[in-house]
Length: 287
Image (cartoon, rainbow, N blue to C red; front, side):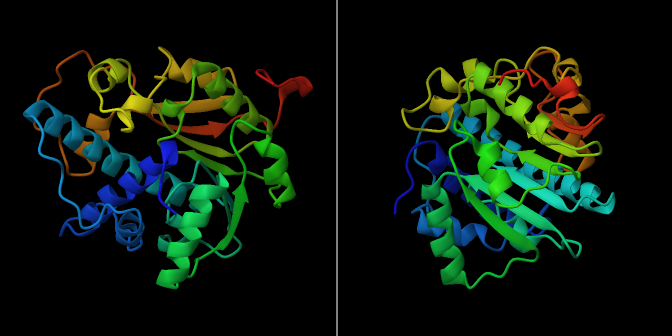
């Protein structure tokens, strides 16, 4: 099975993580990433010969993947330390955190994605004889459908806190679908739940998507973060903090050497904690 469409970008993300894993000072280690990339035909692979501008854009996207991976790794560890034992990865792709993270006993991790990437992933995991470090449950459903029902049928308990991760996902969804996704997450979140989001920064589609190669990740980007992401999340009952890529990179010892070319807007890496549980007054906006 060869990757295609949006989920094929997950294999490209795996290649970036494999390259990071080979660095001496890697920000994380993902021992399965190379196998995912190889199965998808991206390893070994040399970048295409293209112009300098395209090369710089490709490096910028790769850098953002590395930083966001570290950011969400840390968020998940913090959530586990706070006692959260339910994890949901939305649009899980080739995420291998079930296998590479030291989870506390009793952790249940749900990977939600369509059947094609989950089947592709399962074949690689069998080949690598990978063993999950927690209870791993796959949920094959399209996020445009009633995924909360499928998640509940798989054993998710909305009465206890959950840590939700939407990594590299929202940028591929139109604004109304992003709003609906957040409304559904909020309805399934007990007080004390955690949320980790990556959102396209304002202007990223113009900068990267205008001349993107058809079929590439950037050619499928359709949404950016709202002007006030903290206020947006507060309206759904979340206390949020935003972080720019530049801020996180500096904190991780990978500072961006070039000065910002434009005014820094609220960051596209977001962590949040649920203030109140479930839908307020039984109403869920966007549903």
